[in-house]
Image (cartoon, rainbow, N blue to C red; front, top):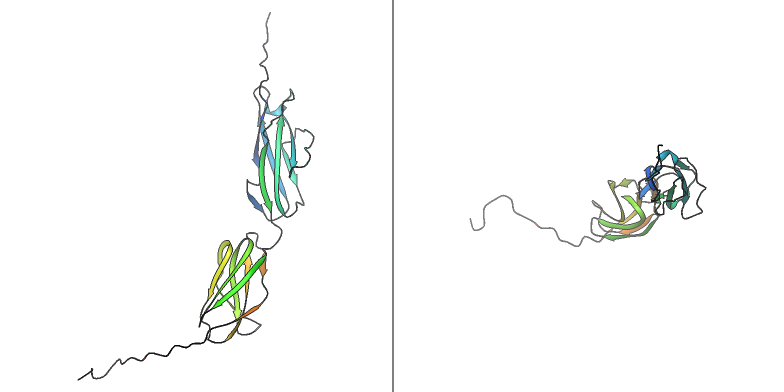
Length: 212
C-alpha cells in the first residue's frame, strides 16, 4: 500500500510586485499598471489568488489575475497594495506596497523677490515641487531677454541677471518647469538697479617716469 503524506500548510504566502511604477515614482499622467506574483510553502504559484486596494480603500475580491491597471488617477500621492492568498485560505498579512505620485499640475511659484546691484539683480523664488530656473527680463514690459536655463530641479531658486544699466527700472519674471515638462511663469515685477556712485580711476600707461 502506497501512502501519500501531505506537507502541512504552515505559512501564509508572500506577495511580490514585479512591475509598474517604482516606489517614490512620479507619473506625468493618471495611468499606472502593476504586475505581481507570489510564493507559498506548499502551493504552486498558479494556485494563488490576489486582492488589492488603492489609497487605503476597500480591498478587492480575490482573483487569479496577476496585474491591475488604473486610469484617470487624480493629481497627488497614491499607494497601491496587493496580497496573495493560498488554496487553504491563508492570506499574506504583509501586503506588497508601492507608493507613487501622479503629477498633473505645473509647479506653483511663490515668494518672487529681487535684490538689485549697480549692474545686476539677484532673483529668488520658491516652487512647490522640484523645477528648473530661468529669469526673463528687459527694460520694458515686453521683456525680451532670458538667462540660461538652470536645468537642476529644485524648490528654492536663485539666479543672477548681469550686464544691466545702473539706475534704471528693469522688468522681470521667473519661469520654472517640472520633471513632466509643465511650466509656470510668474507675474511681471519691477526693480531698479542702484546708482553708480563710483568715480573712475585714471592710470598713466606711457611717458616719462616720475622724476625723470
